[in-house]
Image 1 (cartoon, rainbow, N blue to C red):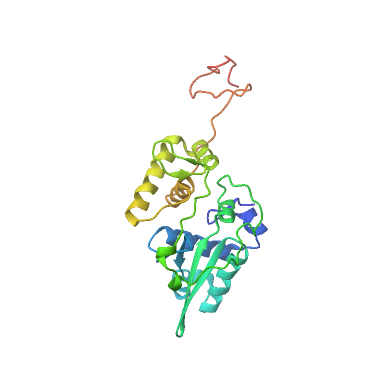
Image 2: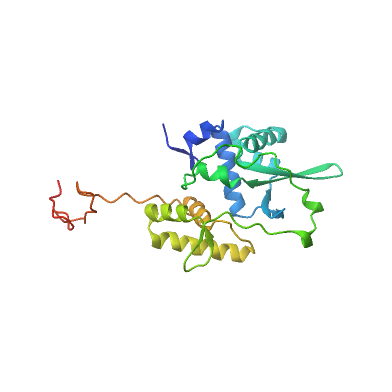
Length: 237
């Protein structure tokens, strides 16, 4: 079985009852969310506005020819616990706002988060209408992270950060966390987990995890070009 579809674990997609069309729509949402999507804070969580007609325009290969069809697909992602939704209503119009449910979303991109259940972030959590929020009464949520970067001073999940270092090397990971920090600063926003955001940026740029180093039979890392292990002297077979 192919491991990933649109950068998401195919096995996890199946567990959540999602198919390749759902994965493509989620990829579109994720990429657009990191880019120019119209966003606003709702009860301390950042949501992005999804125009169903825009999805139809940008993803014609999905065969979704009606806004209601796109709405059903977005609801499917909400029901799976990958996204949460809020709807802003006015006279004759409705705006649909969506945000990531980090607990489930990160299990799709394989960043070291242990899956709990697809209800980990309740898909139908009640969110106030964006137009009724009084900014003077907003309270900031404490990010669900376990550490701060030692030199860049941004919040991150330590386990995810260690996993990324293993896959890409510390220099590259720190470079991308700095990129994320600069991007967030330019947009006037913050991320709860800069390691996870860096992983998204690296995937967007097509970076692939480096190959695991070869080791001798005793488990020591080998040096390319040497015919023996520099640690224990065992010949490289």
